Image (cartoon, rainbow, N blue to C red; front, side, top):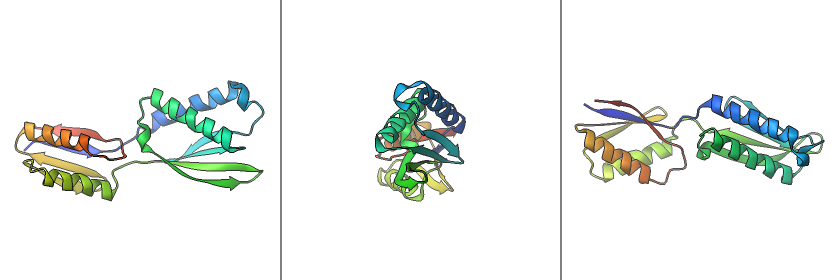
Length: 161
């Protein structure tokens, strides 16, 4: 029985390469000369630390630009609340979302069942497996999922006949 998996995974090596590009660009840009701006990553959290709101916005734009250049979908970024840090600076954490959250997975399953496509959808951890009797039904399910309004970058992997 043909099947495929719907996942949301971000390649962290591409994120690291984009962060290195952001750091290099911040070192050569005139508006960042002498500032205490830095970008770092631990696990799935990118930390932006800078002096003021204007520089934070510029770093955010740089981050989005460099991630786009590395073909990383910026929908995976979840910008957290800005907070005060030590030394009269501000800090913002940016969460890089991995996997499909429960609510989004349920939305995908509900849409497939509601569309009367001859497929079955099941949630397996942080991914959704879709199986059906015909390849055409699975392709219709992919088209249906792409039309949904989900704020996650979705990939369709493990297509098996």
